[in-house]
Image (cartoon, rainbow, N blue to C red; front, side, top):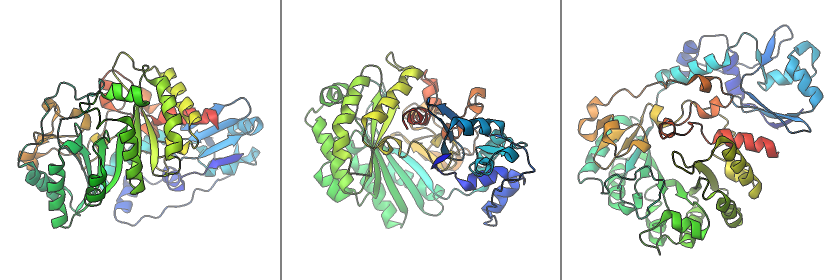
Length: 449
């Protein structure tokens, strides 16, 4: 058996402890818990983990455990022994147990995992606040797939900064706040960014900034004068194809600003400032082939930057949305087109920790504010006031954010559940599958290694 990725031993040990989940979490909250070691026992009965994803490539079998993060390659003889799960008859039996490929027969992994994730929010403190701020709904691009189409374009209202600060003051109990700057195009209203960050600095808050942007408005001045002040750690920039396809899909108001090569240069400048840049590639049937050419063009440009990665995202709810088979084939070809598969996988795949929830909607201390001062639990709801959970005018009455998603039966039976946790409800509501990109990346990666 060839071990490609070792197991996350802490998660494995948690699943094997016989103590009730609630008692374990109480001890963890009180810093009174130490992880015991998982030890294979010849006298116990074992079964294959429900989170083992197996792929037969015609020469051998790959098994990836989506909960414990272990990845192995087995010869067919070893795989036959693995399927029998008789520890006394296998030289590799103890390794199967130690890597989480076999689990004790009386452990209900899915039920125990769900108990941990659902009770975790109640017992483990969430001192850091996560806040997405829509500085403006104005945008210098006119993307056809934008879920904000039809929303009135305007900047965040005057006086919002003081109220946002009061929200942060109330929720960031240890003065830790993670800011996401969102739009529209967030850099079309930098005044709001400067004003809020000045207040955070003045009051000794520990904060970081993440930008979701088309990247066109970053320039030498912003990168040299603002990036450090704003504590920018990461940026997501969208590239939907090579020059002609990209500029047609983005349909910039100012074509010089939205020049393809201008955006490529801005990505390079950010990377040289040690900013993590995630290049989001929105894909549908129309631009799928051009995306492959894009990867061949940009891969050599950014191959030397470990802090630049590629993030495929499938456009949902439209006439050109891709089928499940098309998505998998697309991701596999993307992996084959780049020189280092980690560029596509870093931050999206092979996490060392399973998900505790699917997105910010289920994070206890996570909020999104729109230009009107409405507060949401999902960025994709911005501007749709019927989905707001409160307002900046009434932060004292914000509802309790500890909520547990109602999971579909098919999700609870899915081997990819720990990487997805039921997926994106907004995507599902748009008429697409809820599954996260991890499902496709894991499946495609197993086909090429």
